[in-house]
Image (cartoon, rainbow, N blue to C red; front, side, top):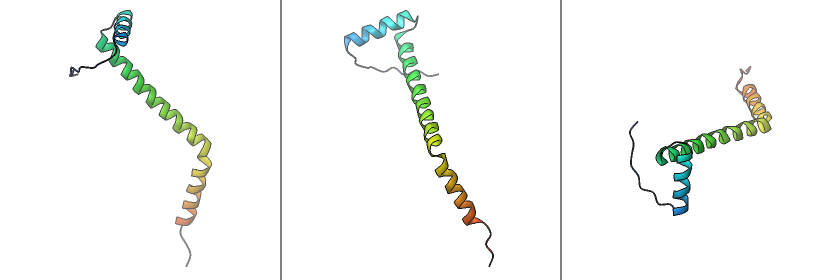
Length: 79
């Protein structure tokens, strides 16, 4: 995978914390930051899926009623 070099500005305290945590995990700071971003994105995706599941669980009857109404109205009609 290609890597791009970026320059970011953070407070000294954050830089020190990131360096220490990366070292604790046996990682470079770059790899540590990449892991944090991946964890955040994966967590965001999972939260979105969970929210969608809760929404459907709460409102499935509305969708079922709409599908039933659609089936009834699009069926064959006698003349």
